[in-house]
Image (cartoon, rainbow over all chains, first blue to last red; front, side, top):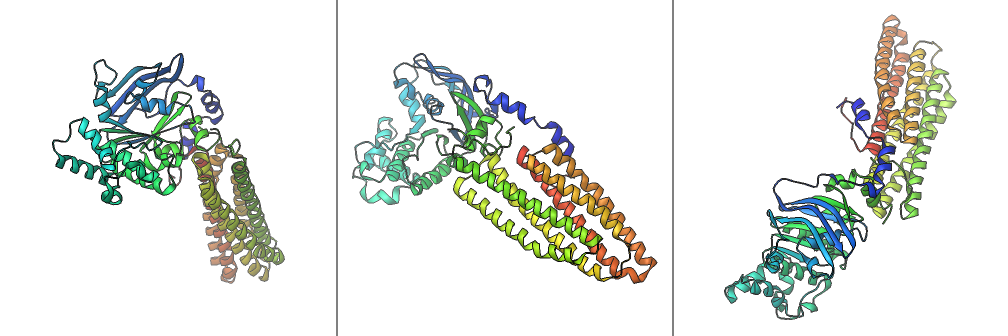
Length: 287
Length: 227
């Protein structure tokens, strides 16, 4: 490319910033929201709470074994959208989801679909660690038991140990498996919840601000864990920490007032975002 | 495409910190521009006291480089800048490096001006220095001007001035060689002039780098090493 073409092909900053800053006029997501052979595929998803529309026409793919981060200001709908991916919104009164949400090409909102089985395939980790008021062992063993994944006590022991190992918690808790999970530190509890999520061998793990209640060291451990888990699982993470999104994800999706504004490779989003709204948010120009 | 601006951060202090760095960089640019002008004048007018001043003042340019670099590191540590802010900070750390090198070259020119002022006042070679000096000074001024306004078009235009400077440099070299062949007594003088035009040519390259950085900071496109 010659120097001259750079000048010609570039967009006039004044014109595009004017157009882009009006979120009402945002028609389509910029960047690369779709991919080949997606693990999950969402098309024209709308989510309503009663009369109020929280998500507007969101279409996005999540690739197999990718980590996708969803960022945006409070109330932008990123958590709502995440919860639509394993029908967690079913439990909210007046919440209605339109559009297609596919897991391996199968619509998860079809009638007669077993939601319990769906949530075993698409696990979730929440903002506040929420271990069951049971022993560490029982916290992990509960899922495999109800899903019939363990035939014997030996199987169950094995699942518990391997899940705790993968969550990086085994060495810290192996001596006290039968003590209550609630007695662990916040970071350990969150890793316990991750161990619990992976014990049922999910395909996708949804994480809703998994580190916002944790200190920086516990956060770093979870982030390292996300990196490791992405070799075997597909991960979608909602985070308020832009640095966290920059560190852990392959692609970043930016939501604003219920619309999906931009999806691009993370390195691009944090150095050269395509959309003016994304730029304004990640440079801290509005919240 | 984002418009360059330091305003509207939620943290007002961040706006001010970035603006402060920009002001410091413009001051450094102004100082370096002045050093170059004085160094060229010192050669043309055989003014050794002006040359001495350039040599003394070089220290100020070095201090500015250190101060600005420190301010950039602080911003990175405190604010974790992203997108256009990040590109701006990275650009500044590179630009101060180029400006400091221009300052060095100006000092080298001044050193030769001191030596040249001790020679007899033959006018051979001054024409080349004056001509190249003017084009390089003007290119640097244009680059700094483009930077002050984040003007990509001006930066791209200024970039191309370096082509003419390189041609003028080669012409100057040929003329200097001719002088040396015609009159071997002029060799030592001509070599000093040769170092001066060499420094001017290098300054053109640094001004070119500045222009490329302006394109990067505004457009996010790296156009280095493409010509």
